[in-house]
Image (tube, rainbow, N blue to C red; front, side, top):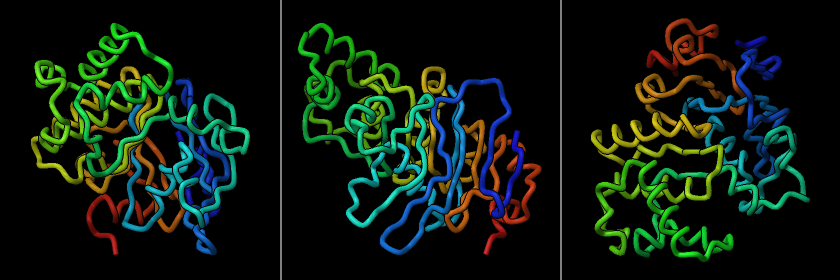
Length: 268
């Protein structure tokens, strides 16, 4: 799958026939004078889960946030290189970032539902995008909650405040909120790190179902989680990607010693 791996090139290309809907070419991210991402080029296949792993501070969350321009919100951040969504570079001043995020949704580390009803959490963005018809909103709310495996638990309490849900339910509501706009890429930054094992398992099961419709890119510190749910894994270290391959190969036959040390718990 990989043509080359290693710090000397940091450019990894896929050889699969599966279509790619998101990729980066020579992506650099600076926070002031600190270069957090050092020219990363990756391609992400449709309907696959890709895990981004690596030690704290290695750049994986920074890279993830770059994929839908979240680093724009940080005053000292500067991003160069290409972010290609279906072949079009969206890392340009002309890009409508708000419109782009309809296609590249994001779920954050801690559940962050609005202090609104379950229904309004999902319908809010739809209304902002011009959907006013109640039947269309009702259908979108039901569909996204079903896809997030939450419908059966909340269908009789749609007007209950979302903050009354459990942590795991809140996170699945955030997933439902993200997919209500029908993106085809879903970014998740450690979505289960604040959850108990049962809720974590429910979120993982949800993601495995969602990959039938979405490309999923997830940052995780949980090696077991990466090995359980992802098709591909990229190992970040010091702002570089030093290995990117099928998950089973990364965890059983890594090409780089640092990768083997990290996934086996002998890193550092």
